[in-house]
Image (cartoon, rainbow, N blue to C red; front, side):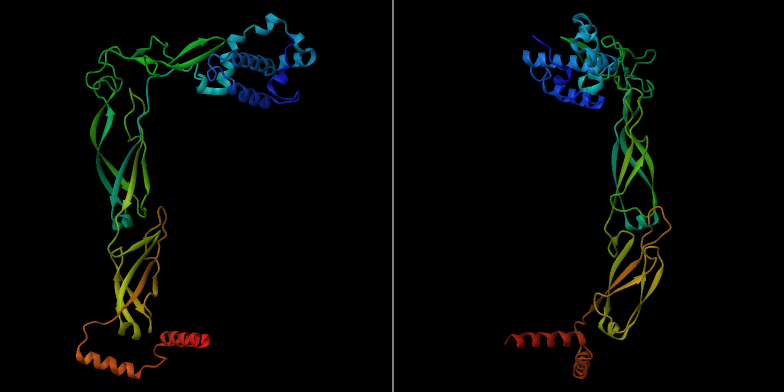
Length: 371
């Protein structure tokens, strides 16, 4: 039976680039891989055919010879020479770890420690000024008895006899090879014959540590601070992980925050709103600021105090403080107060309450128009 054209086998044109060849081979090989079709002889034959085509066309010299002479450029023995040996290299290049692409890499047995998280709650005043917080937390540290090696004093880890220190074992299945994590050392490449009595061979023990955390001024709720190397100790002398401090800012009784700006509501009397005046507010920096109320101020009006808000993180800039006026209606009036307010109402006109007068005039006009 005549052999199919290599380009036709891969489904590419004769002008296909190396990248196009590789992409076409990978796509087709994944579809008919024997691991996906166990016991399927047709899939295995198709898979072998694809690899034969790719092996020749991916080599510049072989491709040039094939383009000129076709299959006659290779005799039967030359075609199969070195095929089984090169199969794993092709798959290492194309599929990486999925097909055991770590071949030849040795493991030191050391594993990086895990990253840790700590939730720290601070007040708005502390976020304004910044602070140095002291935290206590249980974590894994390097075992002092074995200096983190995991081996008893006087001994040391040895190269794994199963994988020879590679951390992976290789198995030949037909014409291709597959690598798996070594079952003896679990990928570390080393084994410990005499484990440390203190850490049972892990190279680390659990201790409670006290750490100092610098919280800069201007931090916001949800800010994350990273302490490099302060996480969990690595296995068997491996590098430690990192510690992440997640900040939560407590709600404040007076001020509300929006970025670098602060907001607060201040109740004022009806008389003060009508006649105008002044009052004093204490800001987060502990100083007092005078606020001028304009004559005829309405409830809900905001007055801005520049530079009295929160500091901007890692900047010299400051936000603003917005004071919202809340005009308070007088309650529990005395007889004399009622008399005075009655007299005031009698003297009032639409000029005294323009917004109220304008609203009712508009309402009257609207409904009369509908009638």
